[in-house]
Amino acid sequence: MRLTIWPRKALLSLAALGAVALASLPVAAFRDGPQSVAPLAEKLSGAVVNISTTQIAKSPDGVPLPKVPKGSPFEDFFEEFFNKRGGKSGPQDRKVSSLGSGFVVDGVEGLIVTNNHVIEGADEIIINFHDGSKLKVDKVLGKDSKADIALLKVTPKTPLKAVPFGSSGNMKVGDWVMAIGNPFGLGGTVTAGIISAKQRDINAGPYDDFIQTDAAINRGNSGGPLFNMDGEVIGVNTAIISPTGGSIGIGFAVPSDTVQAVVQQLKEFGEVRRGWLGVKIQTVSEDIAESLGVAENTGALVSAVTPDSPAAKAGLQPGDLILKFDGKDVSTMRGLPRLVAQAPIGKSVDMELLRGGEKKTVQVVVGRLEEEDVEADLNEPEKKDEEQAKPETVLGLSVTPLTDELRTQLGFDKKVKGLLVTAIDPDSPAAGKNLKLGDVIVEAQQNPIATVEDLNAALEKVKKANGRQVLMLVEDSKGDTRFVALPL
Image (tube, rainbow, N blue to C red; front, side, top):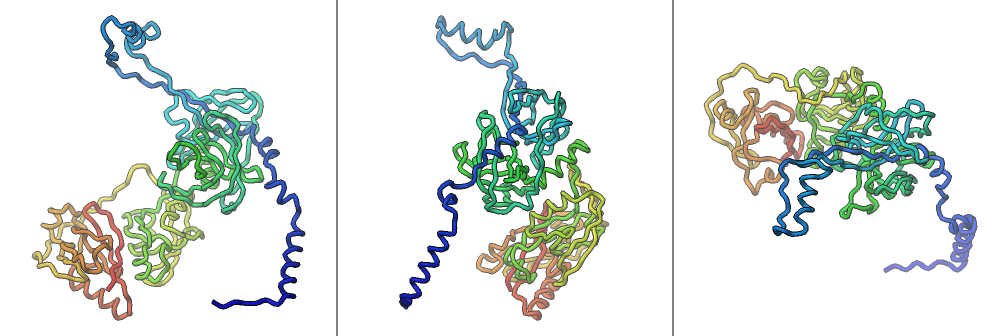
């Protein structure tokens, strides 16, 4: 171990420098803690509302009476309770109530934002305001289950206090935030904390992009606002992770940039109209990244293109790596669907992609995403295949050309051509590489594969370029395609 000895004068200088640095900090910074959020909470509380819903739950017919001894004093009680409740015979419907939060975004028109799951299935919705007044919701202007946002309409006698949206994109991890809501029915509850993380994917929906916060979020906070320190809504509190049902400091909010776009469309159309590209994409794994010569998790890799889709018309191909969409970086695979969904329908946007090792820019006109899957007719005239060949082994894979007979047996579409994987050597590099028996290799290095000779030619091309991975496009009998990189 090497020991460094500082001269005494140097040590005195360092000590003096530290003393000056500490002395330059205000004493109040240590004594009073963080600045109070009381003025902000007082200013904003009037725009945050408690939402109570009522749903009529149908009672099932023929509910059996509990078994009690004949002549028991409870016999008459249970008979009265189950069969003659309210003086009516038979099972009766009952009201189920729930509580949530929301906030006013337009005080003149009486527009209130909350979570879709707060009002889902409700027969009656009541808005409870900070001053004790109540208003019944006249109409649900629209709701979106994918973003979990709903827009409600009330008729105020006088303009309501409203709060503005801020930009969630400008917020950083570590920024202070404040939540106001109705946890466990305790209205007007204020909690504060910081943004713990951004762009969280919690598998709640196809466009997950949550803000994570350690400001206490509990049941009943759903639909309430998450504020920045300027009093702007930068998120809608939506979900928690909790093994106990209470806050453990991990809450999630839908970013305001997403909420604003959804609210605008709900107000204008009563529904959300999302953009559509028409591609199947996958994550760029370490092996695939090496074969493409890019960093892991770069962009979104196109594994299939829907015929007659915006992507097909723009000339996109399987194997294209989408790097930018409409000037915005596609940092991860899941980032692309969010960008496309938020793009205006009919807008022509530039897409930067990597194809064959070279960057290329194409223009695509954004289509509209329909709720139902639109499948084009992919059937082609049947062509006679060659006689089934004996399986051959390549890179630890036993493969054979896909014939008409095999297509019928395995349920492949007539359009699918390639090499069927019939066996995988467990000791080969192919084992554990997201391949399974019954997969069909349709491309290698972005070239169509129909025979073993085609596959070997692709391997030789990689070897001559001193490559170490071969990129293959495979398809299963369900029609799902994906890229797999195998080491040579």
